Image (cartoon, rainbow, N blue to C red; front, side, top):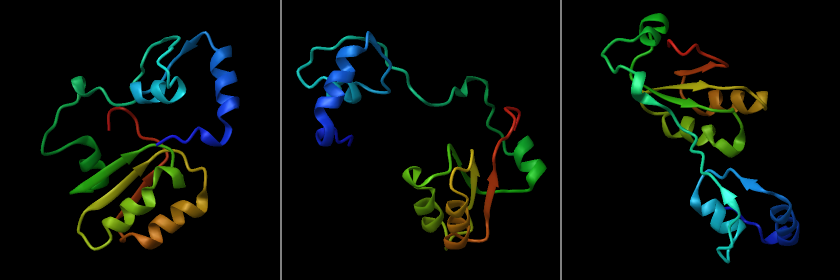
Length: 130
C-alpha cells in the first residue's frame, strides 16, 4: 500500500495543483482523494497486449537462446521490484529466470545471480519479435 501519511500536506497541495491525473488504478485515486472529490482522471494500465502474441511450443526466443522452462520478468532491475525474491524462490528448481530491463543497481543484479540458481539470464533489451 502507498503510505501518504508521512507528508500528507505535500500530496494534498500537489493534488490541488494538478488539472488531470493518470493513475494506474482506482485505489491510487482513492489514496490521493480519500473523500472521493476526484479531479478529472483516466486510468492507464501498465501491462501487455497479447493480441499479437502466438503461443507455440517453439519461439524465436527459445530457439535463439536455447532456454526452456523459464519465467520471464520484464521491468527495471531494482530492489523495489523484488527480482531478488523471485531468483531466491527459483533457486532449487530447474526453472530458469529471464530478467529483461535496465539495470539501475549493478550490485543488485549480481546479488540476484548469486542468490538464485545458475539459470538466471539477463537482457537489457529484447526486440518485440522475441
